[in-house]
Amino acid sequence: MSSDRITIQVESNIGEDGPLTVTDTLDQFRDAFELLTVAIAQEAGGEKIKWRLESLSKNSPATVTGVGYSPDPEVPVIPLMQTGKQRFSRDMAALREGKVAPWIQERASTAKSLFKRNLNGIGRTVFDFDDDLPRTVFIEKFARSSLEALNRVEALLVEDRSHSEHGALDGHVTETKTWNGRPAVYVKDRLTGRLVPCVLSDELANKVGSAHSWSDAWNGQRVRVRGRLFYDKSGVISRIQATDLQDVTSSPVDFKALRKINILEGRSPTQHLDEIWGYNDD
Picture 1 (tube, rainbow, N blue to C red):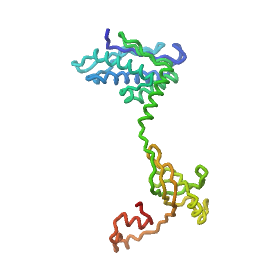
Picture 2: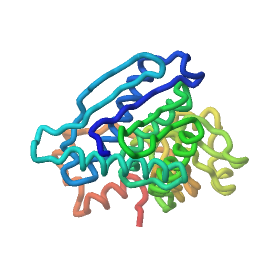
Picture 3: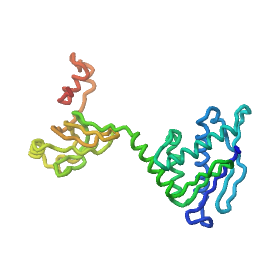
Picture 4: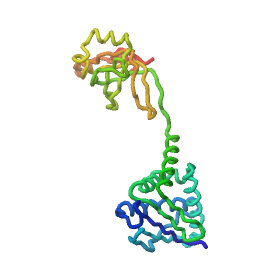
């Protein structure tokens, strides 16, 4: 027989008489009903289903019973809840086998929080659907396999933005040492504040080494590094295979004098900046 009730029980990981924290118990109830709500909302009209608290018991195991209802009298509550319960039961069983339903994926953070509690403090979370459906029970083994399935799907969804390209980086040298046995300077990017290892070729290392003392002249120096820029999976520069490294020095600007001359002298802004910096990206 179909029912508009659902009862959830939470039990300590050391048995029925074991202690449960208030935070873990209430958070587990909240996340459980949130996932049930999403499962029911997959049906047209199901998004209007809400929960009325019927009972809450702190006796072991801690138990809460919710009754589904809708403010809209036209919504068929019991049929929608029956379909939602079936979806929840079926898709949670499939999750244990590594298959992640789209609606669970949409609420992955909630599902992962619930499963993580089942590995730390909570031993069993039981869903009693108050009808002919079998109970759904989360225990440690179920929670662990479900977390692994969710993590695998999330890893596949992360866009890999790793690539390399020729370019330049402007920043300040923070230290000079090696990177995987190669001479390198570590430069703090002026735009992002990220510390980037700039690996020097043998030719470049000899060039800059002969003109500067590594520890005295380079540390703190503002430089412009050119070469092949390598980006990690998130699209952030992770290192540079440097082919050129230049000191960047600034000089005072006479703004009154600038008003009297044509700074660009027919050049485009890009050409003007290239001339100032001494390079271009073509």
